[in-house]
Image 1 (spheres, rainbow, N blue to C red):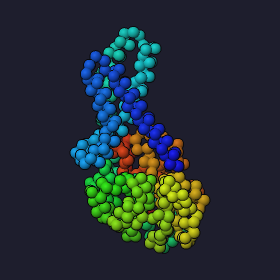
Image 2: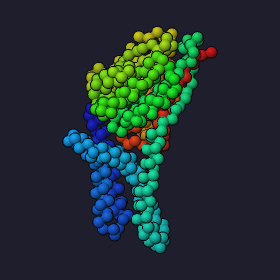
Image 3: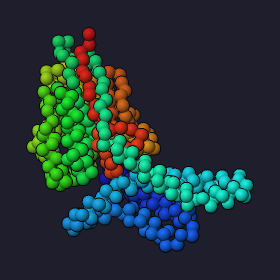
Image 4: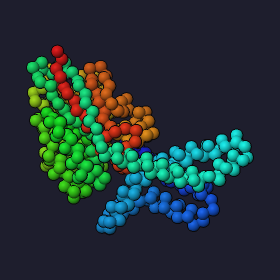
Length: 383
């Protein structure tokens, strides 16, 4: 498992490096005759590509101002390079078509205007990122009604407010978390569920910004519950769990709790635990053995990798996250190819499954092609 992660990370870094050099080369070709400016543009792209790792080095040496600036430049550039690469690649093929099919006069005109085209691409990508940043900071509320046959007939509808992938840390800071907490509390929830990746790996910026004080404002009749995500494990899972629990959030790690005498909440340890302990996590059937099967079973599992297991075990509902629905187009096609359900609602036999695209962001604070969301489930008994 660890080797697989290393290979995957190496592949991503290799593709990122090649994409940056491709954009440098295309910029060089599209901007002839401007001398030193081509070199300055190439050096600027190299700096932006290295900005994020440079921010980590600066942070280590306590160069706070440089670290703060370069981390933001670096994460935005990760999104920018994707769109520069795709657009320049498309223009590359268009160049070939012009060469093959256009008359000589049109070929000359097209290649003469390439500096203006390059400028237009830069302006377009900048505008796209500006929209994506605005979109990422304005979550919407998604409302769903689920009828659960085993919910006691006398029970009043329960309001479950759920979210995933908050990613508190360097990028998602105190102000944005406060905005999200205010939106959640405005729903007057009966229970609040946080489906993993509450903390974006490194706990230090969360502690420094006292984000826990904001999370502690969350209020629900029957409590606030969370499960671990892969990012809690990246930064050391136990300190993150201790921090959340110290601020009023109960973290369920292969645990089962009753909620308002209406349903059982099953919180699964994230599947990435297998990288840290050989025995992995408890099976869902073992966890459900601790429940009274006369009541509905609501499962929280950060990654939507075990929907079949939940269906076969007889769970009534499952909430997951992790995928971000790709976060920005066309990356969304990757989780769609990897998961049985990568975003939204689907029913698998008796199981009502919902995979949230998340309320925060990882890496670039940019969302294009989807919206950050808080999900409000109204659970009703069958008539």
